[in-house]
Length: 228
Image 1: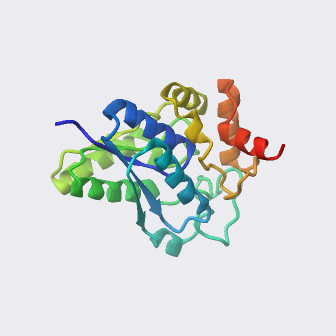
Image 2: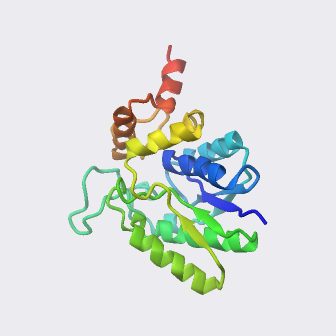
Image 3: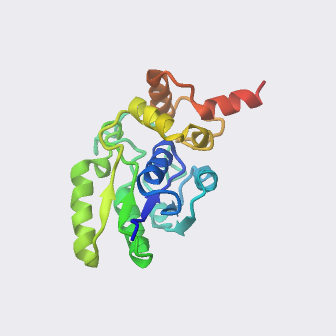
């Protein structure tokens, strides 16, 4: 029996790259994607995830989990909090950090995988370019994998193919996997803007990665073409 995989697809650069990594690893017809509607301000990423899934021809599920919006207190779900550069003096974390987000995402993804008899979860978290988010570290994901296995009595493997990759290395991986065309439909901007604002931390990190890789960003090229 062939292995199947479920990819947590945010609609962003890294998760899209991981979707194509999963297709290369597990094969066409063996991969599906899940996206979470968690009350994010940059809701355009939901549309981007749908377009990316369609581009890759994989089944796509959107699960609603709006508790993060009710909790508030961060720039990604709370309209009263503006995106700021640097870290909070108290937490030493960026104000775009959503406490528990990846833990909750992967727990729900694991529950969906359990229901569908899928034993491989793929996520685009990266410790190298992780903006200081503690739930993107390898130690966190290893502990979560063990907790999910024990808590569900289910054999489940978490794959983090970008864990120790820089943004430039991720761009090169996307190129080699044939994912660059799909990246034209991705969303990264913390401001939720299209064209991207180009000045928020996420936009700057993305631009730096493409520049260091020596490859034009398909998203930037897409909007550049429409402005001609």
